[in-house]
Image (cartoon, rainbow, N blue to C red; front, top):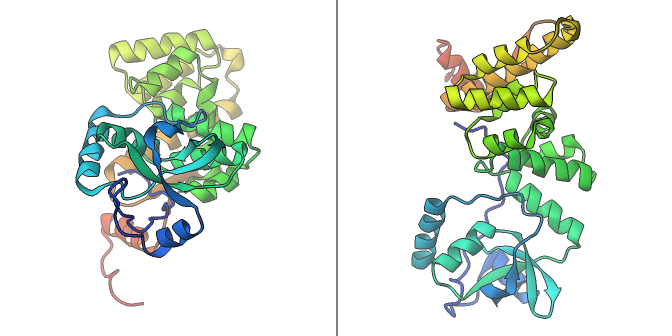
Length: 301
């Protein structure tokens, strides 16, 4: 199961876009009163050029389109005005695409008054908090937030529920050759395979190893071992090799833990060769203890 993310706000249900429904209540009613919510033609909404997500699953889009036909768009996309009756999307491109598939000609949107930098930040943060971005899309989003907008890794982590180390690890993937990035982006190699390739310092060898890993179906461990063997003896400094080995091990065990447990748990390296299992809350701690055979944890303290 994927690691729990910081929850995105869930807005009340608006009337169906383009159906002439009653005035919305609650937050949407307040937004409508202040001119922050309106119905606009879909053709008047331009995509956000800084949108980090590049791939949209056709089956998932079709399922959302079917839902929109039946119930309408339950959470309006967020846009900003760019003049001449035109708008630029900030968040909600999947809903826009599905609405077009559903045959809608107009849609209710929330207007946000923001400059281009603010629009980029909103789009990036809204997307990296989701689970369906590829590792490379996520890495590029984090890099834009850090390098283009000047956000710290700690600030990003607080908003999307990631640790500073994880954000840094995603960004390190961008050091890989473009062809390797494409393999990870398409799912031919995993995030953890990418981390393993970073153990090799030369671009040409990284690319050769990535191609072999795909062709021969290598596991992460096989790729790690092969990457280490490419380093000449003079480059195998014990301190650096140990750090790289620990990073790869932590990435591999976190990936496996998140795939096989029903609660959020993260493994972090400690002093020397120690490791800490960190859980998100008391319920997760109780579930982990039970998985290890501890009893009586449901009794009051």
